[in-house]
Image (cartoon, rainbow, N blue to C red; front, side, top):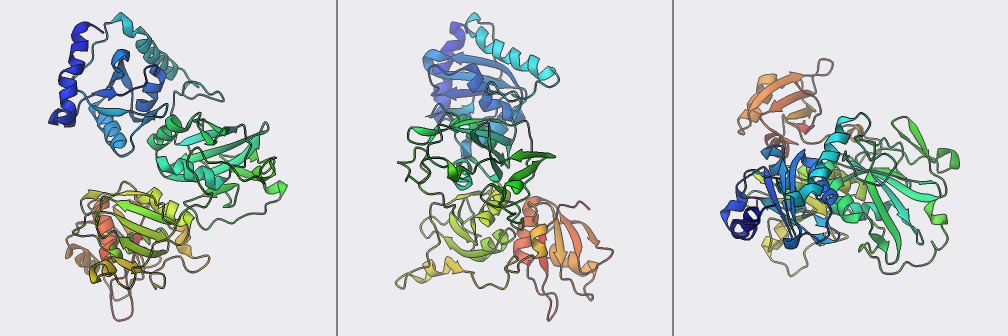
Amino acid sequence: MSSAHLSTVDGPERRCVSGCAQHIPSQVLHLRQLPVDVSEQELLALALPFGRVTKLITVRTKHQAFLEMASEEAAVTMVNFYASAPPTVRNQPVFIQYSTHRELKTDNMNNQSAQAALQTISTAAALPGNMSSGDGWGLVLAPSPVLRVIVENLFYPVTLEVLQQIFSKFGSVLKIITFTRNNQFQALLQFSDTAHAQHAKATLDGQNIYNGCCMLRVDFSKLTALNVKYNNDKSRDFTRADLPTGELEPAAFGVSIHGCVINRGVPVAAVPGSLVSPPRVALQVASPVVQSVLLVSNLNPERVSPLCLFILFGVYGDVQRVKILFNKNENALVQMSDATQAQLAMSHLNGQRLHGNVIRVTLSKHPMVQLPRGGAGQEEQVLTQDFSGSALHRFKKPGSKNFNNIFPPSPTLHLSNISSSVSEEALKDLFSSRGYTVKAFKFFQKDRRMALMQVASVEEAIEALIELHDHQLDHNQHLRVSFSKSII
């Protein structure tokens, strides 16, 4: 990089940190506070999940780097993601913002290694079969939502729940499979988003679960999705609460992954030393108990209510209690019936837009939502509601068909429990009178008690569900509303 290029790093770039320039989108991104010996591969790993990187310049003496993405859209996606989930490289927080540069010039001989790393990726990507790291643990060329985890120096037992707690700090973990191969405890974890998997990999690879042992080796898997048959202590699908536990016999220690069966081998509980109480946990996993309480943040305090959150989160499980924080009423705690339901709700609702705000859903440190004490004021009591006995719970009946009809929010709503006297026009008018734009409508041919309705957006569908689920259609029938995977 020439001296002319370097002079811009401490001038406009530094001033834009606190000014408005950092908010103007650009294909060029500015990375700060990097480890002095950071590699080009580590920098590229931060960006590859969001799109192709066309240019890379490192300024090692200033712990900085510049990345040019192939499109401004990719750069915006990357900045927005890391704004809510700040990245780390070698346990050091890294700051990413838009650069004041509109493009990068890479005519400096000192950055040949960076351009060589880019060329390696471009060449490998063009070759069939070279888009993944295979069974090795080197440079990853094709990020995937599925991570492969090997636990080395396994002195204390590592359970599925421990892995879920560790990895869910970086995003929504949908599925986990644990097994033993080549005398090593391994796991496959599927995130809801490739970027979440990339963030977890970049942060956790090489870290110890417990002090001095149980080191994580994390890489992307060739698989893009996992197929879990059983929910037990060896495998878990957090999106399917209805799965059987299976028989925990040796013949059943297999889980189908795209037609392949993985031999589970010896359970981790049989590892020598598993009965010894573990020392202080390096990754701050104090207990293998997975929480069922969710923290919901960035809510619109003018419009949110406990009932609103009960209806929305009730699509994915039976909500027990809801508490909107008295002094921080843009935040709320939602207690689900169990950890599986909490994980399911988090995976589908995190990042959705509600009342104009993009909400964040994460696991809470609280084991349960406490009801207000006797001395609490009226307003505080209103902000905490106990729904444990609600008749609106969708999953209280074992084997309910509702378990098979859980889908992420979409513009298409599934309407049910419609009485024969209610017409298509009446249902359209019901939604349009509340301000929702009805784009399409269709009764089920074989059962007119059900219908599909498409509104203008996912946000509209979410708000329509909250407002009109359990709406009284006539004197003894109430409308049931859920999300549909269908398109009209």
